[in-house]
Length: 256
Image (cartoon, rainbow, N blue to C red; front, top):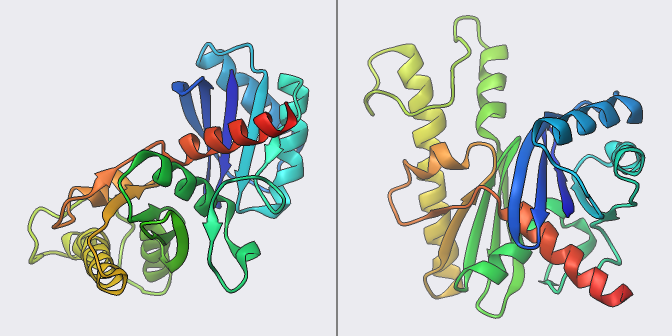
């Protein structure tokens, strides 16, 4: 079985796949100061809780460079395999048309690879995590670029820390759109505001593409935001895990 690891700034998403089937999944908090032994203990606990064994391959995407070596060592200790790390020199099959393709985040690459494989083109992928990113893929399957915005929780944390009276809130839709209290007003701004931003950006991207596109939402807050977007969108919780599997299989075929 394959262990797929997507390391973000807030969470590390784990997925165990048997072929294309996701057998188990989970999340760890991202702490760059923790050692390979500490992550090994967490990884072993995840396998025990999820009743997962027989890992014979692993693949990592990470937007936290300082954590990559730690994750590699912990996977080697627990699973006895050296993981493939998504980065320059790795075969993805993705045509990246950026000024500097090396700037493309490993998470964006993984999400795009899965989107091209799973959905009608062109595709726009919104990944809602610590940052909200938009990735635009044209009808040929080429990554054209996109946008980077403040994440939902990141925005809330920022406004709370910089104001005297605003409280922390949970990420959910308000009881009414025109809010009559502070908490609902914050929920409207963060959740409904992000949904409206996605609607607007998707429409502008489509105008530049010259055709309509499939819109995919993924990431920590994708499910919550997808419910509030006023156009057809698809929420794909495991988009990046699927992309990592596809990338791993492409590179395993090369070695074979």
